[in-house]
Length: 242
Ligand SMILES: [Zn+2]
Image 1 (cartoon, rainbow, N blue to C red):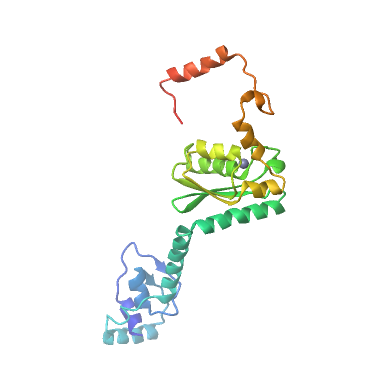
Image 2 (image 1 turned 180 degrees about the vertical axis):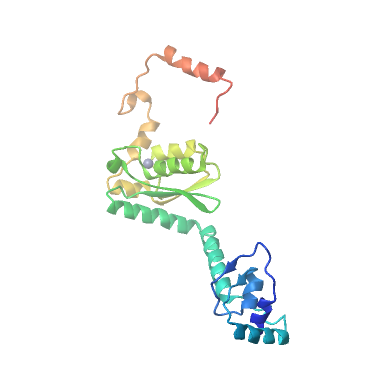
């Protein structure tokens, strides 16, 4: 009761908002002091007189040190949630990638998922959509890189970490290097992937072979014409190196 009176005699400032939400576990005075807002009450005239009398007897400091438990609970919860997201660790991000890989199987995709993180925050995720999108380059890591670059509006993902449910294939590894991602965490190994039919070890082997010994023949053609674009690039003072 004294705290009600405290509120009645406290003039709200111009920018204060009236709210009709009542806090049931704290005194209005504490609520007012904690949130710098006023509570809106309806009083009949006799009730008002009663409160007025109480007010004259009230200690203005009553309830001042009390905290609004409900509101503080909500605020703390929000703060903790933010904290939790901020403090997700490497295992949490890897679990996220693994969950993506698992869900993707149910959605008709390959068993691969990837998550890109910057400053403790997830900026992009990706799953394998090769068959679903008829896109042989739509591996989880490449998809995540494309999304991260779009979100961050950059072609350089320095400062980012990628969590991938499987050790990257040569294409994704190259994409990760081109994107300048700082670090890779992976779940399954490329040997595990090979065991279920995703064997990319032959690509690694191919790269070690001289051009003429590779399975896909690579034949140089019109080098004297192709080099012109390189010269134009070198002479272009407005180029954006990457
Ligand atoms: Zn890949």
